Length: 74
Image (tube, rainbow, N blue to C red; front, side):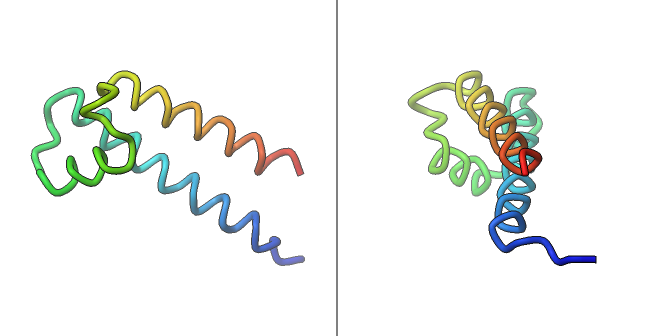
């Protein structure tokens, strides 16, 4: 069994983080995300206050799809 290349490990870690952030954004949309610290972090990463929750959520979904495509292409 061969080890995965470092770039693929980094990409999978990035996908994992994006999925976690997508989940937090969806909780925010439902109104169940209460922690200000998490909201500030998401706002800093995806500029939610400027773009809106729907746009930021869709952007994260698209980033996940493109990253998964890169990881599975090889």
